[in-house]
Length: 358
Picture 1 (cartoon, rainbow, N blue to C red):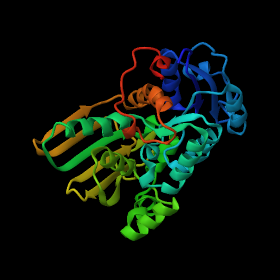
Picture 2 (tube, one colour):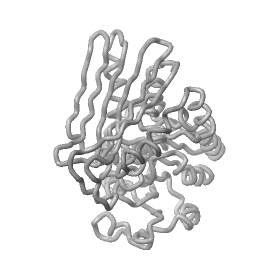
Picture 3 (cartoon, rainbow, N blue to C red):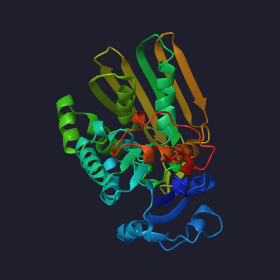
Picture 4 (tube, rainbow, N blue to C red):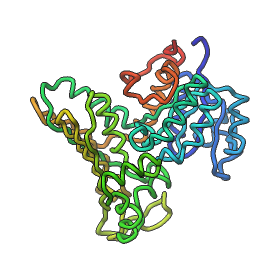
Protein backbone atom coordinates (compact mmCIF):
# COMPACT_ATOMS: atom_id res chain seq x y z
CA UNK A 1 0.00 0.00 0.00
CA UNK A 2 1.49 3.34 -1.06
CA UNK A 3 -0.27 5.46 1.57
CA UNK A 4 -0.76 5.45 5.32
CA UNK A 5 -3.24 2.92 6.69
CA UNK A 6 -6.35 4.70 7.93
CA UNK A 7 -7.61 3.52 11.34
CA UNK A 8 -10.73 4.23 13.37
CA UNK A 9 -10.50 3.76 17.14
CA UNK A 10 -13.76 2.27 18.46
CA UNK A 11 -13.70 2.79 22.23
CA UNK A 12 -11.41 5.38 23.78
CA UNK A 13 -10.78 3.96 27.24
CA UNK A 14 -7.55 2.79 28.86
CA UNK A 15 -6.45 0.50 26.05
CA UNK A 16 -6.89 3.11 23.34
CA UNK A 17 -4.21 5.34 24.86
CA UNK A 18 -1.70 2.74 23.71
CA UNK A 19 -3.35 1.50 20.52
CA UNK A 20 -3.70 5.02 19.13
CA UNK A 21 -0.11 5.98 20.02
CA UNK A 22 1.22 2.75 18.53
CA UNK A 23 -0.80 3.34 15.34
CA UNK A 24 0.84 6.73 14.85
CA UNK A 25 4.30 5.46 15.74
CA UNK A 26 3.95 2.59 13.25
CA UNK A 27 3.31 5.03 10.43
CA UNK A 28 -0.48 4.76 10.21
CA UNK A 29 -3.07 7.40 11.12
CA UNK A 30 -6.26 7.69 13.15
CA UNK A 31 -9.07 9.13 11.06
CA UNK A 32 -11.93 8.74 13.55
CA UNK A 33 -12.85 7.69 17.08
CA UNK A 34 -16.06 6.44 18.73
CA UNK A 35 -17.25 6.12 22.32
CA UNK A 36 -20.38 5.94 24.47
CA UNK A 37 -18.98 7.99 27.37
CA UNK A 38 -20.41 11.53 27.32
CA UNK A 39 -17.29 12.73 29.15
CA UNK A 40 -15.06 11.99 26.16
CA UNK A 41 -17.43 12.61 23.24
CA UNK A 42 -16.30 15.79 21.50
CA UNK A 43 -12.75 15.57 22.88
CA UNK A 44 -9.75 15.56 20.58
CA UNK A 45 -8.03 12.16 20.72
CA UNK A 46 -4.76 13.95 21.50
CA UNK A 47 -6.23 14.96 24.84
CA UNK A 48 -7.05 11.32 25.56
CA UNK A 49 -3.58 10.22 24.53
CA UNK A 50 -1.89 13.00 26.50
CA UNK A 51 -0.33 14.56 23.40
CA UNK A 52 -0.93 17.56 21.19
CA UNK A 53 -4.31 17.70 19.45
CA UNK A 54 -4.63 15.47 16.41
CA UNK A 55 -7.63 17.15 14.81
CA UNK A 56 -9.79 14.07 15.37
CA UNK A 57 -12.71 14.34 17.77
CA UNK A 58 -14.51 11.46 19.44
CA UNK A 59 -18.05 10.93 18.16
CA UNK A 60 -20.94 9.13 19.82
CA UNK A 61 -21.97 5.61 18.86
CA UNK A 62 -25.10 7.09 17.29
CA UNK A 63 -22.86 8.94 14.81
CA UNK A 64 -20.46 6.04 14.21
CA UNK A 65 -21.96 4.89 10.91
CA UNK A 66 -21.90 8.39 9.46
CA UNK A 67 -18.29 8.90 10.51
CA UNK A 68 -17.19 5.52 9.12
CA UNK A 69 -18.83 6.26 5.77
CA UNK A 70 -17.13 9.66 5.62
CA UNK A 71 -13.63 8.57 6.70
CA UNK A 72 -13.56 5.20 4.87
CA UNK A 73 -10.98 3.59 7.17
CA UNK A 74 -8.98 0.53 6.21
CA UNK A 75 -9.57 -0.97 9.63
CA UNK A 76 -11.28 -0.35 12.96
CA UNK A 77 -9.68 -1.20 16.29
CA UNK A 78 -12.42 -2.13 18.77
CA UNK A 79 -11.38 -1.93 22.43
CA UNK A 80 -14.62 -1.97 24.36
CA UNK A 81 -16.10 -5.12 25.91
CA UNK A 82 -14.99 -8.69 26.67
CA UNK A 83 -18.01 -10.68 25.46
CA UNK A 84 -18.83 -11.21 21.80
CA UNK A 85 -22.50 -10.35 22.23
CA UNK A 86 -21.49 -6.95 23.63
CA UNK A 87 -19.42 -6.01 20.57
CA UNK A 88 -21.59 -7.76 17.99
CA UNK A 89 -23.29 -4.53 16.97
CA UNK A 90 -20.00 -2.77 16.26
CA UNK A 91 -18.67 -5.77 14.33
CA UNK A 92 -21.84 -5.96 12.25
CA UNK A 93 -21.59 -2.25 11.50
CA UNK A 94 -18.04 -2.72 10.22
CA UNK A 95 -18.95 -5.86 8.28
CA UNK A 96 -21.94 -4.15 6.63
CA UNK A 97 -19.72 -1.28 5.51
CA UNK A 98 -16.91 -3.56 4.30
CA UNK A 99 -14.48 -2.27 6.92
CA UNK A 100 -11.88 -4.61 8.40
CA UNK A 101 -11.94 -4.84 12.19
CA UNK A 102 -9.70 -6.20 14.93
CA UNK A 103 -10.77 -6.31 18.56
CA UNK A 104 -9.32 -6.91 22.01
CA UNK A 105 -12.58 -8.65 23.00
CA UNK A 106 -11.32 -11.84 24.61
CA UNK A 107 -14.18 -14.02 23.38
CA UNK A 108 -13.54 -12.79 19.85
CA UNK A 109 -10.20 -14.65 19.85
CA UNK A 110 -12.11 -17.83 18.91
CA UNK A 111 -15.86 -17.12 19.23
CA UNK A 112 -16.96 -20.04 17.08
CA UNK A 113 -16.78 -22.37 20.10
CA UNK A 114 -18.83 -20.14 22.42
CA UNK A 115 -21.18 -18.10 20.23
CA UNK A 116 -21.33 -19.78 16.79
CA UNK A 117 -24.62 -18.12 15.86
CA UNK A 118 -23.30 -14.56 16.13
CA UNK A 119 -19.92 -15.54 14.65
CA UNK A 120 -21.63 -17.01 11.59
CA UNK A 121 -23.71 -13.86 11.15
CA UNK A 122 -20.63 -11.60 11.25
CA UNK A 123 -18.68 -14.04 9.06
CA UNK A 124 -21.33 -14.07 6.35
CA UNK A 125 -21.65 -10.28 6.30
CA UNK A 126 -17.88 -9.83 6.15
CA UNK A 127 -17.63 -12.27 3.24
CA UNK A 128 -20.46 -10.50 1.40
CA UNK A 129 -18.75 -7.14 1.76
CA UNK A 130 -15.14 -8.19 1.32
CA UNK A 131 -13.65 -7.45 4.75
CA UNK A 132 -12.00 -9.37 7.57
CA UNK A 133 -12.99 -9.46 11.24
CA UNK A 134 -10.79 -10.96 13.97
CA UNK A 135 -9.80 -10.89 17.64
CA UNK A 136 -6.27 -10.54 18.94
CA UNK A 137 -4.29 -9.13 21.86
CA UNK A 138 -2.17 -10.59 24.64
CA UNK A 139 -3.55 -14.08 24.07
CA UNK A 140 -2.37 -14.11 20.44
CA UNK A 141 1.21 -14.65 21.61
CA UNK A 142 1.19 -15.50 25.30
CA UNK A 143 -1.70 -17.99 25.31
CA UNK A 144 -1.42 -19.01 21.68
CA UNK A 145 1.64 -18.68 19.50
CA UNK A 146 4.22 -19.32 22.23
CA UNK A 147 2.49 -22.54 23.23
CA UNK A 148 2.05 -23.81 19.69
CA UNK A 149 5.71 -22.98 18.98
CA UNK A 150 6.90 -25.01 21.97
CA UNK A 151 4.61 -27.82 20.86
CA UNK A 152 6.41 -27.73 17.52
CA UNK A 153 9.64 -28.75 19.27
CA UNK A 154 7.99 -31.56 21.25
CA UNK A 155 7.97 -35.22 20.19
CA UNK A 156 4.95 -36.42 22.19
CA UNK A 157 2.33 -34.49 24.18
CA UNK A 158 -0.07 -35.86 26.78
CA UNK A 159 -1.15 -32.60 28.38
CA UNK A 160 -0.82 -28.84 28.05
CA UNK A 161 -1.32 -26.97 31.30
CA UNK A 162 -1.40 -23.18 31.50
CA UNK A 163 -2.09 -20.37 33.94
CA UNK A 164 -2.17 -16.61 33.47
CA UNK A 165 -2.99 -13.83 35.91
CA UNK A 166 -3.81 -10.18 35.28
CA UNK A 167 -5.03 -7.14 37.18
CA UNK A 168 -8.62 -6.29 36.24
CA UNK A 169 -7.87 -2.68 37.23
CA UNK A 170 -5.92 -2.28 33.99
CA UNK A 171 -8.78 -3.06 31.62
CA UNK A 172 -11.80 -1.05 32.66
CA UNK A 173 -15.05 -1.58 34.52
CA UNK A 174 -16.70 -4.01 32.07
CA UNK A 175 -13.93 -6.56 32.47
CA UNK A 176 -13.77 -6.14 36.26
CA UNK A 177 -17.51 -6.73 36.58
CA UNK A 178 -17.36 -9.75 34.27
CA UNK A 179 -14.86 -11.28 36.70
CA UNK A 180 -17.19 -10.81 39.67
CA UNK A 181 -14.87 -8.29 41.34
CA UNK A 182 -16.56 -6.53 44.25
CA UNK A 183 -19.28 -9.13 44.74
CA UNK A 184 -19.90 -10.94 47.98
CA UNK A 185 -19.19 -14.66 47.82
CA UNK A 186 -22.93 -15.33 47.80
CA UNK A 187 -23.42 -12.91 44.90
CA UNK A 188 -20.45 -14.43 43.06
CA UNK A 189 -21.89 -17.92 43.41
CA UNK A 190 -25.28 -16.79 42.14
CA UNK A 191 -24.12 -14.48 39.32
CA UNK A 192 -20.88 -16.11 38.12
CA UNK A 193 -20.17 -19.64 39.39
CA UNK A 194 -23.71 -20.98 38.97
CA UNK A 195 -23.50 -20.50 35.20
CA UNK A 196 -21.19 -23.52 34.95
CA UNK A 197 -23.05 -25.89 37.25
CA UNK A 198 -24.84 -27.40 34.27
CA UNK A 199 -24.63 -30.57 32.19
CA UNK A 200 -22.67 -30.74 28.95
CA UNK A 201 -25.96 -30.91 27.06
CA UNK A 202 -27.27 -27.77 28.78
CA UNK A 203 -24.00 -25.97 28.09
CA UNK A 204 -24.08 -26.88 24.42
CA UNK A 205 -27.67 -25.70 24.15
CA UNK A 206 -26.65 -22.33 25.64
CA UNK A 207 -23.71 -22.12 23.24
CA UNK A 208 -25.95 -22.84 20.26
CA UNK A 209 -28.30 -20.06 21.37
CA UNK A 210 -25.47 -17.57 21.99
CA UNK A 211 -26.27 -17.42 25.71
CA UNK A 212 -23.12 -18.97 27.20
CA UNK A 213 -20.65 -16.86 29.19
CA UNK A 214 -17.16 -18.22 28.46
CA UNK A 215 -14.05 -17.43 30.44
CA UNK A 216 -11.11 -16.25 28.34
CA UNK A 217 -9.46 -19.68 28.31
CA UNK A 218 -12.58 -21.27 26.81
CA UNK A 219 -11.79 -19.55 23.54
CA UNK A 220 -8.03 -19.97 23.93
CA UNK A 221 -8.41 -23.75 24.20
CA UNK A 222 -10.47 -23.73 21.01
CA UNK A 223 -7.80 -21.64 19.25
CA UNK A 224 -5.02 -24.00 20.42
CA UNK A 225 -6.90 -27.11 19.35
CA UNK A 226 -7.49 -25.63 15.90
CA UNK A 227 -3.86 -24.53 15.62
CA UNK A 228 -2.50 -27.92 16.71
CA UNK A 229 -4.95 -29.95 14.61
CA UNK A 230 -6.72 -31.44 17.62
CA UNK A 231 -10.35 -32.57 17.66
CA UNK A 232 -12.32 -31.45 20.73
CA UNK A 233 -14.17 -34.28 22.44
CA UNK A 234 -15.39 -32.37 25.48
CA UNK A 235 -14.78 -29.05 27.21
CA UNK A 236 -15.76 -27.92 30.71
CA UNK A 237 -15.33 -24.75 32.73
CA UNK A 238 -15.24 -23.99 36.44
CA UNK A 239 -15.04 -20.56 38.06
CA UNK A 240 -13.71 -19.95 41.58
CA UNK A 241 -13.82 -16.62 43.44
CA UNK A 242 -10.58 -14.98 44.55
CA UNK A 243 -10.41 -13.21 47.92
CA UNK A 244 -7.98 -11.23 50.04
CA UNK A 245 -7.50 -10.98 53.80
CA UNK A 246 -7.60 -7.16 53.75
CA UNK A 247 -9.73 -4.50 52.09
CA UNK A 248 -8.51 -3.47 48.63
CA UNK A 249 -9.37 -0.20 46.92
CA UNK A 250 -10.50 -0.49 43.31
CA UNK A 251 -10.29 2.72 41.29
CA UNK A 252 -11.93 1.00 38.31
CA UNK A 253 -14.96 -0.13 40.30
CA UNK A 254 -14.84 3.03 42.42
CA UNK A 255 -15.25 1.03 45.62
CA UNK A 256 -13.48 -0.73 48.44
CA UNK A 257 -13.54 -4.48 47.95
CA UNK A 258 -14.04 -5.77 51.47
CA UNK A 259 -11.82 -8.47 52.97
CA UNK A 260 -13.34 -11.85 52.18
CA UNK A 261 -15.40 -10.56 49.24
CA UNK A 262 -14.57 -11.49 45.66
CA UNK A 263 -11.61 -9.61 44.19
CA UNK A 264 -12.14 -11.48 40.93
CA UNK A 265 -12.08 -15.05 39.73
CA UNK A 266 -10.06 -18.02 38.61
CA UNK A 267 -11.54 -19.85 35.64
CA UNK A 268 -10.26 -23.31 34.74
CA UNK A 269 -11.12 -24.77 31.34
CA UNK A 270 -10.40 -28.44 30.63
CA UNK A 271 -10.50 -29.74 27.08
CA UNK A 272 -10.31 -33.44 26.20
CA UNK A 273 -9.43 -34.28 22.60
CA UNK A 274 -9.92 -37.32 20.35
CA UNK A 275 -6.15 -37.51 19.99
CA UNK A 276 -5.70 -38.07 23.75
CA UNK A 277 -4.15 -34.68 24.53
CA UNK A 278 -5.70 -32.72 27.40
CA UNK A 279 -5.52 -28.93 27.59
CA UNK A 280 -6.11 -27.45 31.04
CA UNK A 281 -5.83 -23.69 31.19
CA UNK A 282 -6.56 -21.20 33.94
CA UNK A 283 -6.96 -17.44 33.89
CA UNK A 284 -6.89 -15.49 37.13
CA UNK A 285 -8.31 -11.98 36.86
CA UNK A 286 -8.69 -9.95 40.02
CA UNK A 287 -8.12 -6.61 41.74
CA UNK A 288 -4.49 -6.90 42.78
CA UNK A 289 -3.15 -6.47 46.28
CA UNK A 290 0.31 -4.91 46.74
CA UNK A 291 1.89 -8.38 46.60
CA UNK A 292 0.29 -9.51 43.33
CA UNK A 293 1.77 -9.27 39.84
CA UNK A 294 1.01 -10.56 36.34
CA UNK A 295 2.33 -14.04 35.58
CA UNK A 296 2.07 -16.37 32.60
CA UNK A 297 3.08 -20.02 33.01
CA UNK A 298 2.59 -22.94 30.61
CA UNK A 299 3.85 -26.51 30.77
CA UNK A 300 3.79 -29.00 27.90
CA UNK A 301 3.84 -32.46 29.45
CA UNK A 302 5.30 -35.13 27.20
CA UNK A 303 8.63 -35.92 25.59
CA UNK A 304 10.35 -33.73 26.55
CA UNK A 305 8.52 -31.71 29.22
CA UNK A 306 8.90 -27.95 28.87
CA UNK A 307 7.78 -25.11 31.14
CA UNK A 308 7.60 -21.48 30.12
CA UNK A 309 7.30 -18.80 32.83
CA UNK A 310 6.94 -15.08 32.20
CA UNK A 311 6.78 -12.91 35.32
CA UNK A 312 5.47 -9.36 35.30
CA UNK A 313 4.64 -9.03 31.59
CA UNK A 314 3.35 -5.59 30.62
CA UNK A 315 0.02 -7.15 29.70
CA UNK A 316 -1.77 -3.97 28.58
CA UNK A 317 1.06 -2.75 26.36
CA UNK A 318 1.63 -6.25 24.95
CA UNK A 319 -2.08 -6.51 24.16
CA UNK A 320 -2.09 -3.22 22.29
CA UNK A 321 1.16 -3.88 20.43
CA UNK A 322 -0.21 -7.25 19.30
CA UNK A 323 -3.34 -5.55 17.96
CA UNK A 324 -1.39 -2.95 15.99
CA UNK A 325 1.21 -5.41 14.65
CA UNK A 326 -1.65 -7.64 13.41
CA UNK A 327 -3.20 -4.87 11.29
CA UNK A 328 -1.41 -5.80 8.01
CA UNK A 329 -2.35 -9.48 8.51
CA UNK A 330 -6.01 -8.56 8.84
CA UNK A 331 -6.01 -6.37 5.75
CA UNK A 332 -4.15 -9.07 3.77
CA UNK A 333 -6.44 -11.88 4.97
CA UNK A 334 -9.30 -13.54 3.15
CA UNK A 335 -12.75 -12.11 3.84
CA UNK A 336 -14.88 -13.35 6.72
CA UNK A 337 -14.44 -13.97 10.42
CA UNK A 338 -10.88 -15.28 10.50
CA UNK A 339 -9.18 -16.32 13.77
CA UNK A 340 -5.53 -15.29 13.98
CA UNK A 341 -4.38 -18.91 14.01
CA UNK A 342 -5.17 -18.85 10.28
CA UNK A 343 -3.11 -15.70 9.69
CA UNK A 344 0.32 -17.12 10.49
CA UNK A 345 2.83 -15.81 12.99
CA UNK A 346 2.43 -12.43 14.61
CA UNK A 347 5.54 -10.48 13.64
CA UNK A 348 7.31 -7.34 14.81
CA UNK A 349 6.83 -4.43 12.40
CA UNK A 350 9.92 -2.29 11.93
CA UNK A 351 8.65 -0.51 8.82
CA UNK A 352 5.47 1.57 8.46
CA UNK A 353 2.45 -0.74 8.55
CA UNK A 354 1.35 0.05 5.00
CA UNK A 355 4.58 -1.46 3.65
CA UNK A 356 3.40 -4.88 4.83
CA UNK A 357 0.08 -4.65 2.98
CA UNK A 358 0.03 -6.54 -0.30
